Length: 163
Image 1 (cartoon, one colour):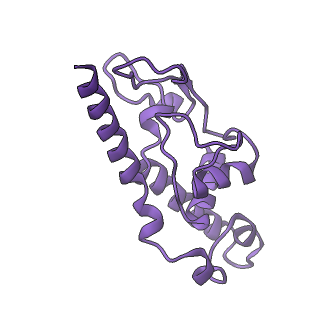
Image 2: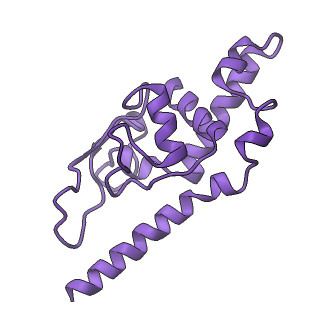
Protein backbone atom coordinates (compact mmCIF):
# COMPACT_ATOMS: atom_id res chain seq x y z
CA UNK A 1 0.00 0.00 0.00
CA UNK A 2 2.82 2.38 0.89
CA UNK A 3 4.43 1.72 -2.51
CA UNK A 4 1.18 2.63 -4.23
CA UNK A 5 1.21 6.07 -2.54
CA UNK A 6 4.80 6.62 -3.60
CA UNK A 7 3.91 5.80 -7.19
CA UNK A 8 0.88 8.09 -7.15
CA UNK A 9 2.86 10.96 -5.56
CA UNK A 10 5.76 10.49 -7.98
CA UNK A 11 3.37 10.48 -10.94
CA UNK A 12 1.59 13.60 -9.65
CA UNK A 13 4.86 15.44 -9.06
CA UNK A 14 6.14 14.35 -12.47
CA UNK A 15 2.99 15.69 -14.13
CA UNK A 16 3.32 19.05 -12.35
CA UNK A 17 6.97 19.30 -13.37
CA UNK A 18 6.12 18.29 -16.95
CA UNK A 19 3.36 20.90 -17.14
CA UNK A 20 5.82 23.62 -16.17
CA UNK A 21 8.63 22.73 -18.59
CA UNK A 22 6.99 23.50 -21.97
CA UNK A 23 7.56 27.24 -21.46
CA UNK A 24 11.18 26.79 -22.52
CA UNK A 25 10.34 24.26 -25.22
CA UNK A 26 7.83 26.49 -27.00
CA UNK A 27 10.09 29.53 -27.23
CA UNK A 28 13.29 30.21 -29.09
CA UNK A 29 16.55 29.51 -27.37
CA UNK A 30 18.30 32.40 -25.69
CA UNK A 31 21.10 32.44 -28.24
CA UNK A 32 18.70 33.02 -31.15
CA UNK A 33 16.75 35.82 -29.52
CA UNK A 34 19.41 37.77 -27.63
CA UNK A 35 19.06 40.90 -29.78
CA UNK A 36 15.26 41.09 -29.77
CA UNK A 37 14.64 40.04 -26.15
CA UNK A 38 12.98 42.52 -23.82
CA UNK A 39 14.78 42.45 -20.49
CA UNK A 40 14.24 44.68 -17.46
CA UNK A 41 17.36 46.65 -18.42
CA UNK A 42 16.43 47.11 -22.09
CA UNK A 43 12.80 47.83 -21.20
CA UNK A 44 13.83 50.66 -18.88
CA UNK A 45 16.39 52.09 -21.28
CA UNK A 46 14.34 51.96 -24.48
CA UNK A 47 13.24 55.45 -25.50
CA UNK A 48 9.69 55.98 -26.63
CA UNK A 49 8.54 52.56 -25.46
CA UNK A 50 9.57 53.15 -21.81
CA UNK A 51 6.61 52.27 -19.65
CA UNK A 52 4.94 50.35 -22.46
CA UNK A 53 7.89 47.96 -22.68
CA UNK A 54 7.93 47.55 -18.89
CA UNK A 55 4.19 46.92 -18.94
CA UNK A 56 4.59 44.29 -21.68
CA UNK A 57 7.33 42.52 -19.71
CA UNK A 58 5.24 42.53 -16.52
CA UNK A 59 2.17 41.29 -18.41
CA UNK A 60 4.18 38.46 -19.94
CA UNK A 61 5.43 37.54 -16.46
CA UNK A 62 1.87 37.68 -15.08
CA UNK A 63 0.72 35.29 -17.79
CA UNK A 64 3.51 32.80 -17.01
CA UNK A 65 2.97 32.99 -13.22
CA UNK A 66 -0.82 32.72 -13.33
CA UNK A 67 -1.46 30.48 -16.36
CA UNK A 68 1.64 28.37 -16.98
CA UNK A 69 3.59 27.85 -13.75
CA UNK A 70 0.49 28.47 -11.59
CA UNK A 71 2.62 29.70 -8.67
CA UNK A 72 -0.44 30.67 -6.62
CA UNK A 73 -1.27 27.02 -6.01
CA UNK A 74 1.51 26.86 -3.42
CA UNK A 75 2.60 30.44 -2.75
CA UNK A 76 -0.84 31.98 -2.03
CA UNK A 77 -2.74 31.26 1.19
CA UNK A 78 -6.24 29.82 0.82
CA UNK A 79 -9.51 30.98 2.36
CA UNK A 80 -11.87 28.70 4.29
CA UNK A 81 -13.34 27.46 0.99
CA UNK A 82 -9.98 26.55 -0.53
CA UNK A 83 -9.89 29.51 -2.92
CA UNK A 84 -6.74 31.56 -3.43
CA UNK A 85 -6.85 34.68 -1.24
CA UNK A 86 -6.29 37.57 -3.71
CA UNK A 87 -5.63 39.90 -0.77
CA UNK A 88 -2.52 37.86 0.06
CA UNK A 89 -1.55 36.98 -3.53
CA UNK A 90 1.83 35.18 -3.67
CA UNK A 91 2.62 36.18 -0.08
CA UNK A 92 3.68 32.65 0.92
CA UNK A 93 2.32 30.71 3.82
CA UNK A 94 1.75 27.15 4.98
CA UNK A 95 2.42 24.43 2.41
CA UNK A 96 -0.90 23.46 0.81
CA UNK A 97 0.27 20.09 -0.48
CA UNK A 98 0.61 17.20 1.93
CA UNK A 99 2.70 14.12 1.31
CA UNK A 100 1.27 10.62 1.52
CA UNK A 101 4.40 9.23 3.18
CA UNK A 102 6.96 10.80 5.55
CA UNK A 103 9.54 13.03 3.87
CA UNK A 104 12.11 14.57 6.21
CA UNK A 105 12.85 17.56 3.99
CA UNK A 106 9.22 18.47 3.19
CA UNK A 107 8.83 22.21 3.86
CA UNK A 108 6.26 23.56 6.28
CA UNK A 109 5.94 26.97 4.62
CA UNK A 110 6.22 28.38 1.11
CA UNK A 111 8.27 31.58 0.66
CA UNK A 112 6.78 34.93 -0.28
CA UNK A 113 7.19 35.75 -3.97
CA UNK A 114 5.31 39.07 -4.21
CA UNK A 115 7.51 42.17 -4.13
CA UNK A 116 10.90 40.56 -3.64
CA UNK A 117 11.39 36.83 -4.31
CA UNK A 118 13.94 35.04 -2.10
CA UNK A 119 17.61 35.61 -2.92
CA UNK A 120 19.12 38.01 -5.40
CA UNK A 121 17.66 38.66 -8.84
CA UNK A 122 20.39 36.56 -10.45
CA UNK A 123 19.81 33.66 -8.02
CA UNK A 124 16.10 33.74 -8.80
CA UNK A 125 16.76 33.81 -12.56
CA UNK A 126 19.15 30.87 -12.12
CA UNK A 127 16.49 28.92 -10.23
CA UNK A 128 13.94 29.43 -12.99
CA UNK A 129 16.34 28.73 -15.88
CA UNK A 130 18.41 25.84 -14.52
CA UNK A 131 16.34 24.34 -11.72
CA UNK A 132 19.16 25.04 -9.23
CA UNK A 133 18.32 27.11 -6.14
CA UNK A 134 20.55 29.58 -4.31
CA UNK A 135 21.75 26.69 -2.11
CA UNK A 136 23.34 25.04 -5.14
CA UNK A 137 20.81 22.19 -5.14
CA UNK A 138 17.46 21.66 -6.85
CA UNK A 139 14.54 23.17 -4.94
CA UNK A 140 12.84 20.99 -2.34
CA UNK A 141 9.60 19.30 -3.34
CA UNK A 142 6.90 20.25 -4.11
CA UNK A 143 8.66 23.07 -6.03
CA UNK A 144 9.34 21.82 -9.56
CA UNK A 145 12.78 22.42 -11.08
CA UNK A 146 11.82 24.84 -13.86
CA UNK A 147 13.75 25.19 -17.13
CA UNK A 148 12.48 28.54 -18.45
CA UNK A 149 14.24 30.68 -21.00
CA UNK A 150 16.08 33.66 -19.56
CA UNK A 151 13.51 35.99 -21.14
CA UNK A 152 10.63 34.15 -19.47
CA UNK A 153 12.46 34.11 -16.12
CA UNK A 154 13.14 37.87 -16.36
CA UNK A 155 9.47 38.47 -17.17
CA UNK A 156 8.40 36.42 -14.12
CA UNK A 157 10.80 38.40 -11.93
CA UNK A 158 9.50 41.72 -13.32
CA UNK A 159 5.91 40.68 -12.56
CA UNK A 160 6.72 39.49 -9.03
CA UNK A 161 8.57 42.76 -8.29
CA UNK A 162 5.57 44.73 -9.55
CA UNK A 163 3.32 43.24 -6.85
